[in-house]
Image (cartoon, rainbow, N blue to C red; front, side):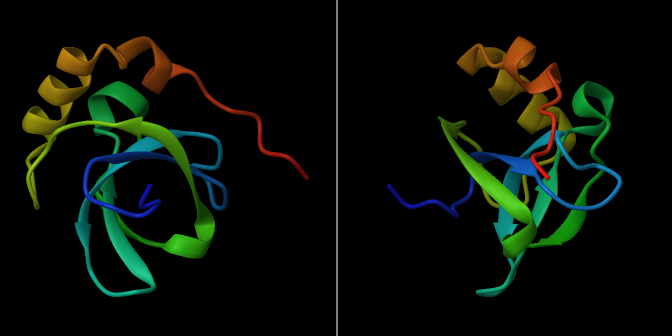
Length: 93
């Protein structure tokens, strides 16, 4: 299993969005990825994130590189992860 790949569902571990889930939509370099919630579903807006601040899950959705928020939302619905994405994980301190 490749932990950091396009379509992987992740949990943000740092920042104001800690505990919220998002989907990786692009790999920028070995340290950064582009993620989106999408904002309408998880309130995580599209942004560049350090991979050290993400925790990958075992869930994967089928999206293309730089997929729009609508495409990501559709893929989440098709995979049946909508309820899973809406739940917030309490970060461990």
